[in-house]
Image (cartoon, rainbow, N blue to C red; front, side, top):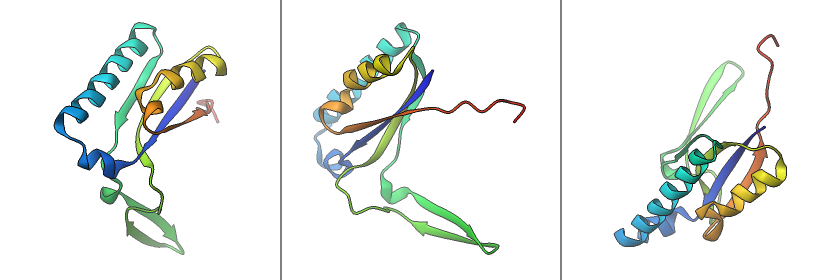
Length: 119
């Protein structure tokens, strides 16, 4: 079964982190990604740009509305994601706990729904 690991952290803290601190985080994620690949659990994943670069798009009554981000007043924003393959929820939770972001942010773990091709 596939699971999405949604990584939330304080993106402003990233902006003020030193190059060395950023390098440590990037290195930890590269090692984690390699561990996922080695285990055959890696499906995909990417970091996301700062929420100030985000746009919210809505279609209402035939009109498009575009709103600039950020959209929440929270200290933590969605900063990236992994899609993993795990045999069950316990295995997915283990991978989430091993993710570097779990030590400085929060990970939301969600099963990925499979929609049949003939639906």
